[in-house]
Length: 330
Ligand code: GLN
Picture 1 (cartoon, rainbow, N blue to C red):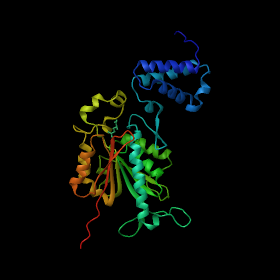
Picture 2 (cartoon, helix red, strand yellow):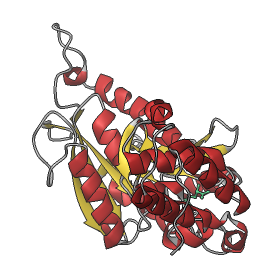
Picture 3 (cartoon, rainbow, N blue to C red):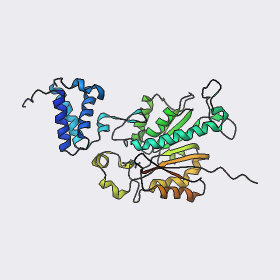
């Protein structure tokens, strides 16, 4: 085999960027650098210190292999095996959808609404010492329990685990998915974020994992909050998606039927079986689905007015509402 020319890290990265650009990768320069950082185990901010270093043949071969993968359209996050969401690190691979930045809106809104849960009960408000007292919701029997949250179609666990990690009061988060493979990824993420096994009694959020389609794993159970980023892409739109998404991310996490609405049709009419009075239901939606999903909630007659919220790009991204409290008899 012909031996390659000796090369510095900088030259190698430039070659990588050129190859990615030729293969139609949009962020060729950034990705060529990030793949090098991943390989060399250096942070982005220290990369420049590597530039003059001479590369060994082994390093060159390993880097070229990563560039080849990215060049065929494999997402950067799958190659490096992780992504950031809500400031937390999530492992990802081809078994799960890569958490999108716009989904952070759903988590932020859920965290904001959770604060409302805590102020509703005196036990949830700060004590004289300024410390948040545990137990934040009061069930009809008067016993105080953590807020119960379902992350339905959890994938990597990005939504449910972020809420569990960032909530300011004790929560019990059930993460469910139809894919046992996805749940394996979510479990690993839970472990790395410091959540172990099933529900514990710690002050910090606790998590559990359930396998099944849509609301099936919630059978016979009620939650105070149901969060869900279901598959919602129209079947006809899928062939036109970026190759990174179309060829590498799980179709199961994307395809929402002919009009993209199958998941909502399946779940919204059944939500009240699983939501406490005043409980919150929140869905991620496609930019053109806000009105239709809000109407579905209205048709049940069991929810308050549905709110449609826009993401940072100004596109409709989430719909949320609360289950109505029963009318008090006069
Ligand atoms: N927002 C994702 C995308 O555009 C789709 C996520 C979903 O279907 N839940 O690729």
